[in-house]
Amino acid sequence: MELYTPDQTDRDILTLLQKDARLTYKELAAMLHLSKSPIQERVKRLERLGFISSVVALIDPNKFENCMISYLQVQLTNHSVNAFRLFQQEVSKLNEVLECYHTTGGFDFMLKVVARNMIAYNDFLINKFGRLDNIGTLNSSLVITQAKRETALPV
Image (cartoon, rainbow, N blue to C red):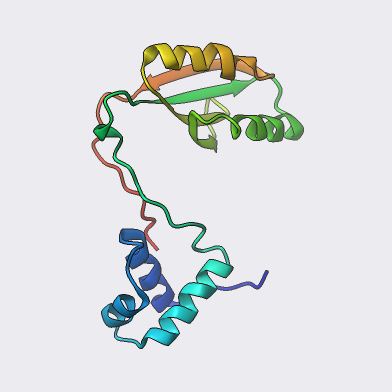
């Protein structure tokens, strides 16, 4: 893969697309005072190089009656490189896990987990997550309200 550092125009494209991925090449070109063709080439390059990994629709979880979000901190019992990799592979297969981060501090991983309700969350912990090897200490934090939700990275 070629090494590439985005210039300011690329950064401007990424900023705009993070806010509205439905923008057309023509609209991007008008906003950035360029022609459509170079914008299209730049977007394609950013996609090819992995700067743009996917285009998705963000769904507001508050629109669903039964949607509980929690953050689950996990401490593993074995801290070998292989154990960490295996945990990450296995947890990535669980549909309830939206995000998984290897972290510093008192826990090894932080997971963002979604469930319909407390009964479904308990079922997830016992019957899915609890069956994974190498699980030590857990700490769950349930989301009561969300003050901010931003997906755009400052580029």
